[in-house]
Length: 442
Image (cartoon, rainbow, N blue to C red; front, side):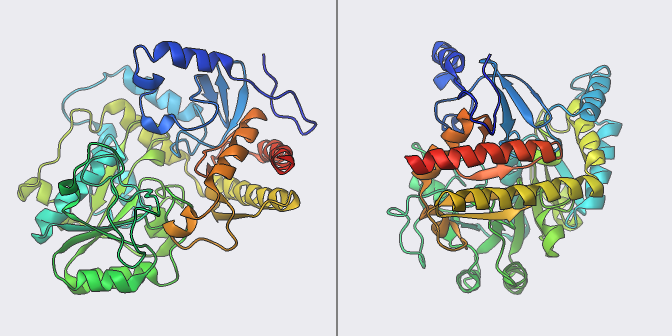
C-alpha cells in the first residue's frame, strides 16, 4: 500500500496498477477512458475504487486529496451521506418512468427560487445538451442566427460550439479579430458559420458586433472558469447586458461551473446581472447527471407553444432529481462560509509556497474555485493572458503534487468542496511546499 502525503517527505506514490489496467482495457474502451478530457494528466489516467469526502482511493492503494472534485461537480465532497440516502430511497420507487414525478417538481421549485433568471426551467442530463437548447431557444426567440462566444469559454463538445475554447495563439489570429479555431478534428468550417468569436472582458467589440443586427445571443461564462478563474472587469457584465437590450439580442450565461460554486445564485447572483437564459450542471446535483436551462418565462414557454423542440429520455430521471434536492438542501450559508474560508486560506498558502521556492505564478479566483498559472507577472484578464503562461511547467508541478498525494487539474484549476476542512488544507499545503521545492531543484 502506498503512503499518503506527508510534510516530512513520505515515499512518493506510484500508479503502476492504474497504468496496467488502462493499457489492458484499452482493448475494449478506446484509450481506456470514456472522455477525452480524462487522458491528460501524467503519469496517465488513474483508476479509482471509491471516493469519500475530499479523498479518492485508487487501485494502487493511494489515498489522494482531490481537487478535481468530479471536474467541479462534487461541491459537497465525494459520496455525501445525505445525497446517498436520498438517491437510495428514490431508486426503490423506480428508475425511469417516462413521465413526471413529485421530486422533479420539488427540484424545479428550489432552483427557480434560488436562481435570478429562472422564471421557468427545463432539466437535461449534461451541460453540453443544455447549451444546445439555449442556442435553439435564442434563435427561435429572435429570428436571428449568430451566437457570440468568447475565446477560452467552453460550452460543450458539439461541433457547432467547440470553437476557440482553448486555441493555440499562433492559430487564433489577432486579438482584435479572433479566428475561429476548431477544438477537434472532424469539425468543418461550416460548423462555425453561426458563431462570432470575440475576446472576453472587452466591451467595445461586443457593442460593435451587436450593432450589425444579426446576433441572437451573447453567450459567456459570467466568470471565466474553464480556462483560468477570471472575474469580469468592473462594469463588463452590466455593459453587455445593456448592449444586448439595445440591440435586441439575448444574454446567455453558461453557469455549468460557476453555478453553485460562486453561491446558490451562481455568477448572476454574485454580480447582480440577470441574463435572459442560463445553463447549469455539475454542482447542481453533486455529480449526478443533471443539467438545467433556466430563463424568462416568456422565452421558456417557446418550448411549449413556439415550436422549439427540447427532449431527452433521461431528463429529470427520478434518482438524479432526488440527488438535486438533497444537494441543494446541503448548500447552506454556513457551509459556504466554512468552505470559502478554507479555500481562501489554501490559495494564500499556495501563493506563499510558490513564491518561497522562487516560482513566478499568479493564484487567482474565488473561494471554491481558483486557478494557478505559472509564468505570469500580473493577473490575467482573458484567455490570451492565461495562454501565455508556462503550462508545461505547471503540468510538471501537478505531477509532483500527485506523487505527494494531491490531485489537481493540469490546466491549473483547483476545485474546493465543503469536505475540504482545515486538516486537509494543512496536508495539502505541506505537499505543495515539498512539490514547489522539488520543482525549483529541477
